[in-house]
Image 1: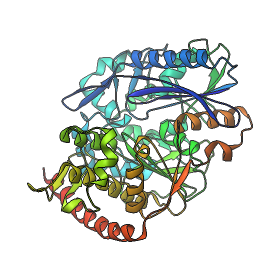
Image 2 (image 1 turned 60 degrees about the horizontal axis):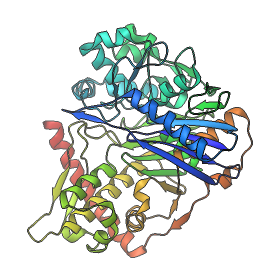
Image 3 (image 1 turned 90 degrees about the vertical axis):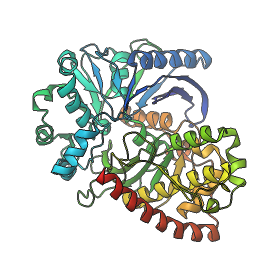
Image 4 (image 1 turned 45 degrees about the vertical axis):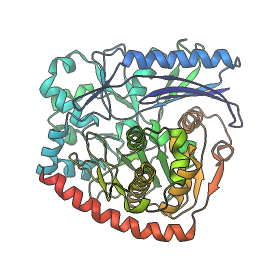
Length: 476
């Protein structure tokens, strides 16, 4: 069997697949997040322990030889480790907002734009550049104690393989230090961020081969294991999004829009990033927004409802939600795609005593759909669109998204990130797999022409409301 490991933000999963790509079993363990005053941290040992636990449970449940394993996980943030891959402080999540003042300053003085023009990466508070600069100012002893500043999957890879040094792949290296043309670190960017004296913390890049053999924790000793890509490009692989112009929308905690491209354009508004892939000259133009299902979760809690009620609530309010509108930018660190605005916050509009909970829920789902359309347009979507993630479990919301986006949706189910991690591992180890069979959609959702036309007009109104909200946020 083939095993895909996905060390996510709130859930760690391992999935087993047969050679034809059929999902045999999945094991999952939740992991905690500590939120306080804009800071978001995780216990790295808890995350690693969850990886070992799910692997042990999976291999016990499906007692077949493991031919190959692929590893993916949450991107960005900073996971400081010693030479053995053990954490020297709690991991700082990609959701962390404490570096927002630095990003505000860099936005004002042109540093964010300068970095984007060099690397195609628009920094946001939770990405490694600002977080390392923040740590250098406020917790220099933590950096002094660290051998490397890695991403989540890199820590797991080092521990699972017993590798002697930290290594990452080109996808995680893409934000914000990697020159996408040379596929090596841009020391000029390191200098721009005032981190030249911390340059040694950046892990080595396995381009594209970041592989090793498992040492026996969770996986049988000697199992070939590949590190990366991280979760966004892994999902693109798992959904079959590799042809230029084709896109993927991940409806999860983070609303991620990805479009495959062979064109590197470092002009335009600095936003999102270009993710380097295992194929030189091929990138994913990524718009990983902070908005996502977390916004819907908040609104459902506010209305006393749960995910089980979502389809009924969407059916109880018509398109347009009786005039209620939601700008769904609830993240404490603002927004990062398709623009960077750390001060942006959510807004509820058109609410009156006549508004029902269903209106608020539908308006939130519509607002998330408008944000997705904005990101996909900015990323250059011209081909087919696949969707995956927890949000696609709701037939009503998936249909609403098809209407708001105005295009058919290829719905890809199951553990898409873990599937992509296996496909990446197979490519690196030269194991032939039928990619088309592994990545076929479960179904295709067609938009309703009438609703799509109506939503196209409301989308333009959404952009006007968003522009006004951005102006207000910039003045604060």
